[in-house]
Image 1 (cartoon, helix red, strand yellow):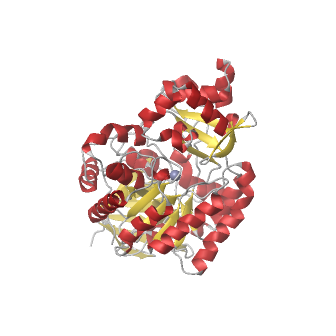
Image 2 (cartoon, helix red, strand yellow; image 1 turned 45 degrees about the vertical axis):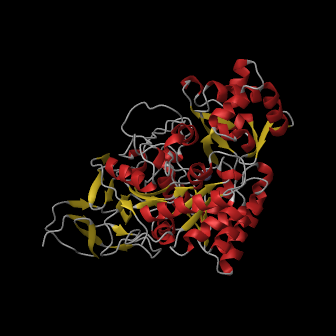
Image 3 (tube, protein in one colour; image 1 turned 60 degrees about the vertical axis):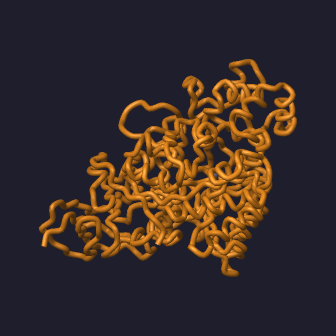
Length: 533
Ligand SMILES: [Zn+2]
């Protein structure tokens, strides 16, 4: 018989954590048909993988690409890293459910930094149909954002949910699960998710416990509140009866760096008593989010329009500065911890001349205090500014990556395609997360074996949310494959020059189609919207 694809002569790292072995991989249509040494043709297509590793396609456990698929369904900046599946709808953000009278609120909340929000739908099912129609190149496992549930059920309000509000959220969560959501996510530093209390989240978790949903948590604080916040997430999982994933595990703010060991111990003690808690991490010591998240959560009450009103009001500006300015030179919020103005860089902004500059530089140029520049910029640009901030320790990043409860999630925001000049200075994790784990952390620093690195981005991730027949190189599994050169694989994207694809990943296969071919994008539209088992 003829295979549709034969990947010959490679070293197979199958994603289970098992040692590499020499084997050929035969593909028949969208499935792996055989994995064994010495497989012969004929085959419609043969890829010579000698000297290379053949791994399952990588699974990005935490991505914000859902806000960008409608503008960039090719997802090239993700696919070129070897990623074949993304887990999205993270940090409380999703574009559905959506009440027809709230489109502008959603646009201000989830849009703003180049996101492509279509918003023609209302239900989560309609939204997923629209996403299917644009055909992302990668497979998509979608969560529903707690912020979207809350806005639809009770508006963008800074108050606890009442009984009826909660019922509304539970109904919408149930509908999203029926449509194919894997669970819900919070962003407890982002309004309006941040306005919820623990009981609200436990009640939501209980709603989906019987159907095997997961709770993915951007926790309430990653700086001074780190340990309490991890404990809260674990409690929500434990009392709600669902698996809990702690997103982009980190300790923000220098004074909190030493807490990372205690944070990792919280995973271990909870797991020891049977709680299903795991986490994900990106391999960088800088984070990235919208610049308006430098404002306290109370200032977001009512949405972006209200925030802009407050930023135009002198007395409110004074109150914000009094609350956030530390020793006249650092800015402190729950989400970031204390951070210097020279550690906060403009990533994306309509005023392109500001991209790549830090707030202290912009303040010097303007002859103003950095806090004033920060608030002026948000006001003038209507909060459509993205930032990169250096608030973490490099040593901690390696420690978290190496921990057995942690897998890989890029937390990347935009998507890009093509070659040449592109706008913005996005966080390099946008282009480099997975090759950086393989090159920098497995090959160069040897914090774990290549097999462990691959497991954390394939089999472990698929097992985490029960992705059927994905995440392993095994007969019968879907043919999502990444072929990389273990000696050269490397992230090329840097903070000053982010728009660079990685090297050493010549072939990527999605559902049996060779999408990256000899390091070039060669096919699109190959992904599927995945649904829970
Ligand atoms: Zn987050």
